[in-house]
Image 1 (cartoon, chains in turn brown, blue):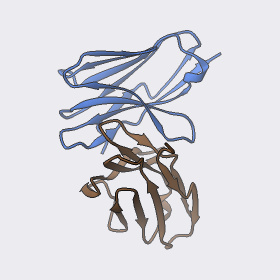
Image 2: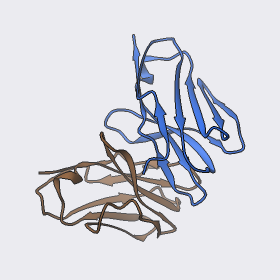
Image 3: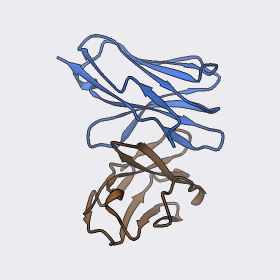
Length: 111
Length: 110
């Protein structure tokens, strides 16, 4: 199994631009989580899905952030417009039962 | 919001010594998990302990859980240089939400 696949691995963009992060979960997993990691705030849960349905998006910072899971094998996290304070590592993780499997993350830098 | 809080924030020990990290949390949980993160990588699951369990072992890892104190500890015995990493506790609550603490940075000195 290839594990959780995230793309791109690195993203550098300018303030105001739209950013789309992508995630392919492990086949057969029914839960998907998006986290953001910074030195100051640690790992923050942004949103999670069960069976492609968003269950809790209370961690999404503001309306500039949106996430979708159109099918069981793909999810996106979009930031529009991006701001410098969005710079962080964004992780996607999938799960079948309790235990999370993480992707390698997307390092986002907003200049 | 953070559920778990690890203690200490950073720990340096000599190779061969035991390393102990603690985690406290705030609300009722289904289970508590420990993960490891090497620099620049995603987190890797180490061990899970359920709310009705008090202790669990896996290789050189020992985890305890005290639900009355809302705390857990992770013990790594006979540490090795390769154990250098950040360690996070994560709590799963009744609504399947999994929240992480800020982690303990462990450095094993040769």
